[in-house]
Image (cartoon, rainbow, N blue to C red; front, side, top):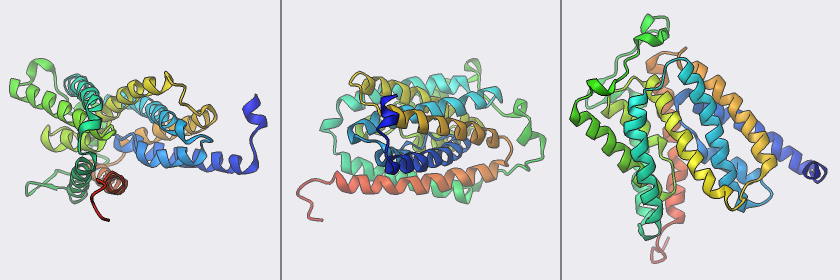
Length: 289
């Protein structure tokens, strides 16, 4: 292939580091139910020959990683298809509307709000507290931690109307917010599932990762139409991210609920830091710092 002949030593090193980073981000993202596109985007920018191709490449890598992790969550019965439909479809609609009107929104201010919410929810998951109450902890060796059959899911017929409206509203609002600021915002959808909808965090992880897959897939189509893809980076980083996501998703059912929630919180706090930097770069020109 022509692209292999054009590789120099520096590019090989960059691809190798990106591959290792993809494996790590895939593993963590698959375990906690997040696509982790932001930290992976830094790897793509570093490894891609053309920065213009980075966004399209990254969103498909994130989608592939999410698909692999979601498949393992599906096999282990950790996807709530009712929540997937009621929350996911409005998220896609909200993201489209937000993206359409994104140029007219105060992006910097919205990013600050997103960063604060992500940091706060991450902190509450680390502490295991919400509204003064501590989440119940499971022993990894107990039946509730290991047997997928005992994980609580919802069925459409058993959901009160107000709960359906809540799920639809949360999905639409988070999708709208994400479309306005250009992010999938799985970091907001995941705690909303756990804290507001009171879902088991393991089911929330699988469901959120599945929504992330479809969101990323539709976003990639837009980039593909303009051929904004770095194929060598896509193949190498995509492969390692998929392997990492698959292995990470297998860990979701092997650790206790409390440990999983701590990991979710840690990842959310860490990944909120780039949001504040992005908000700084999007500040209005009249702000003098």
